[in-house]
Image (cartoon, rainbow, N blue to C red):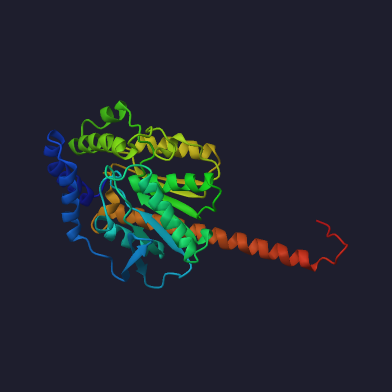
Amino acid sequence: MSSAQHLLLKQLLTAATGPLARRRPRLATMRLAAEAAAVFQFVPWNVFLEDADVDGMPAEWLRPAQAPAQRVLLYLHGGGYVLGSLNTHRALVGALARSCQLNTLAINYRKAPEYPFPAALDDARLAYDWLLRQGYQPHDIMLAGDSAGGGLALALLLSLRDAGQPLPAAAIGLSPWTDLVLPTAMLRRVCHEESQILEALEIRGWGPLYAHQTALSHPLLSPVQGALHGLPPLLIQISDAEVLHDDVLAFCAKARQAGVPLTLQVFEGLVHWWHLFWRFVPEAQQALNQVGTFTQGVWAAQESARAVLQASGRRARQVPRGQSRRV
């Protein structure tokens, strides 16, 4: 059962968005409201904010105290490819950086409809390449994103893989948008929640704004439609009450079938974007803590594999030339 804090949040969101579901606001109004709400967001204690310029793209570092210098998290914010900014997600990214103990680079990628596909993907790839040029190794980089940003992170993996580029160590999707082809059945499933009706109606419109002249089923728009082999370890978090729940489960099933190491964590009864409210919703802090546990597990597995390789190399050097060791 959801916490009392989440139940209160849900009531507040329903009260705020219910009227909007009947009279849908303009995109400019929603952008302004999102930026206004960001005024109340603060970077967590012991996380330090630093402006960055990624080849002309606005970005910022969120650096937890004691975070290792050689590892980095690249964060792609959500907002349906049309909303959101560094401001709207700063507190969440800072909390995630602290949970993972990773220096985190957040970017302000271009938004539709002014900049349709593939602008956001090009910006995400630009940021990844920029990190490589700064000296970070692929195995020391992780990707993360929420909602559309989570889908963008998965699309970036597919793009890098298909281009033959080295992939990052892992990727994290917080309620990722994996399929822009949203079926009518999805609307019927959430029709009892006014806040979810607004969410469903809006994202059905936002997808085509981003896709523009590209089919919504294109794998770099809808990763669930693509071949998923060869991807690094993935962590996917979703709530069973979210609009995107069924699509995320379909993506996870397909990824596992393709041999991708995937951790799926399903939360009960939570609203979309519950991670944003980590300051007072305990389920959000729990989810971020589990992300931290996942990242530590990835690093531990790397260290273990490295130790095995080093041990194998030492044993090989101990065998005299021309002889073989009995196994």
